[in-house]
Length: 154
Image (cartoon, rainbow, N blue to C red; front, side):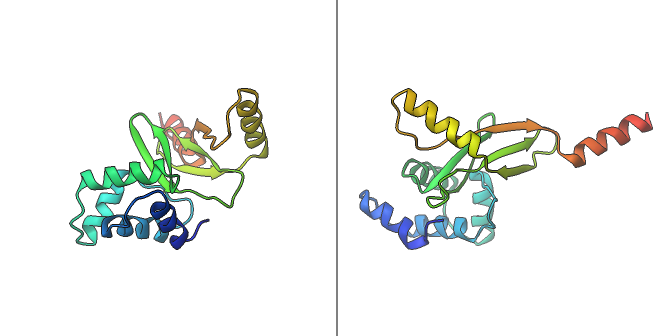
């Protein structure tokens, strides 16, 4: 994963100032456990809990900017509900996501096959590969067990 300083340099190199709001939002993403994703609303709740005066509109603009610069990876898990995570430049093979349709639990996984297919498809189409996002939907083990218990009880 890129360092906090390297990501700040990305912003500066592309002509963007490192505002206190952008610094605060970057700090929050760097403090997250690996594999955790935030929506704009999740970010705003964290900011509010820290008594920040950053508005939701500023959070949205900052998330969009950081995603467009490749600092954050924008993920679309459900309709019109984006989540964000730090972009991992050193991983090479991007991780993908499997999402429970019942409880929304999201797990990350990596797949060399998905990566190779993505690079190959981009190459055949004359594109420079930058990212692939595969979403697999299903029911997690907990939700499967809950369904079985419900069915047995009826």
